[in-house]
Length: 187
Image 1 (tube, rainbow, N blue to C red):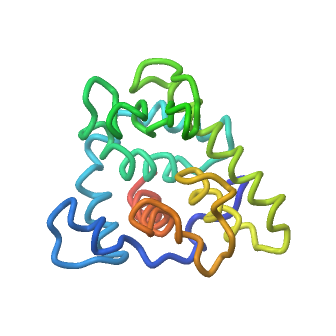
Image 2 (cartoon, helix red, strand yellow):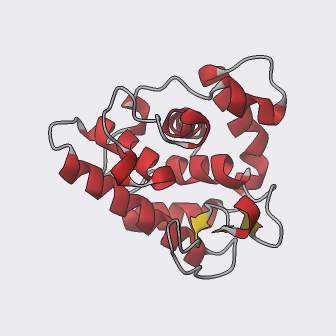
């Protein structure tokens, strides 16, 4: 859509550490695809909301689905909408910790309002990466923005090591691989 083609973004997929969430005996793109597929039924419940938000923000719905899968396993890991020991809210885990993202949670944890807030944050970080690295391709900027969604744009220093400071040191690579799976499977 508006920020590069998710299908053209290079990815190594999930790290071994991330793949162990599902006790997989493998890592990389196949592990990301397996986890995306595991979450597909839960993600599909939010398809209309995801499509609406994606259209309004010019973000691939598959990318929103992938972030939901990575962040909360499409709600499966949340306790009354909360994750990350009470520091993050909703399907896409908006960081409300004053020492982290410092956002105020908007809407119910599974609402379109929440998805809009989280996607607005994602777009903000993609634009920050575009400004910070104007020489990167749109696909590289998209991947950098995904990494920044997890850890802030101040922690993105190079494309070659974009996930150096992300959760599991694979956040953008895993999200991209999941998004590619969702795109190939109807999102």
